[in-house]
Image 1 (cartoon, helix red, strand yellow):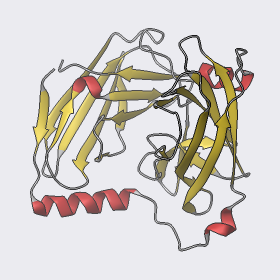
Image 2 (tube, one colour):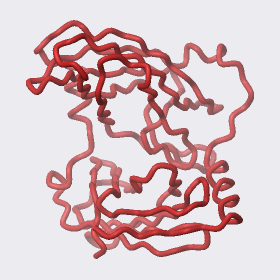
Image 3 (cartoon, helix red, strand yellow):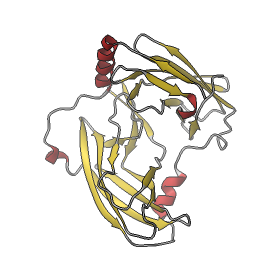
Length: 279
């Protein structure tokens, strides 16, 4: 599929970086130790799948009044990041994010979770049949009256083979957004046009109403590209979402429509749309 490429100048690069920095909520200089009890972490061992993978999960339990962020956290959020470089006998990890909630604070929107969230992980071993050391650092944001970056260290041996599904993981998998087929998506198109500092994307998704106030989130599928909060509206059977995109270093970037991911968060259910066409 054809790609659309945009180049920005050095001057535009500085403006792009400034925009990325202002998109993240400013945090005070506070000692990490004061917030050690904000998040409690538990690894759920899960069970072995017939294809040799392990289906495990991480449970994050948040103190009352605190929230953390989804993979695409919105302008006021801090994106979570897992560092798997010190894991052992782990070839690949695929995360499944349950449907998040939309929060508005001080006029800014963020997308994430309160109370607790269970994040399923499909883990592929490098050497099948051998124990796997799940060793990672999770860098995340947590927010209450203040928003702070937070780190969680995880170091667990996955060595208890089991074929019985774990209820908490099953429930988390059932709480993911609907697929395009489940939500009866009829079409998904994306129009791209150059802007002064990057690119504008207008996504149109034709599907039944998902309930309440619908919020669309656009992920371009390109590392280092910042995407603004989408302006979302509905015209008849179609949700229209418009976002601005720019690269953090101000350089060239390409958008492949097949990699674009559009999530529509409705009052009744959410929908995960993978890829769009030129229309």
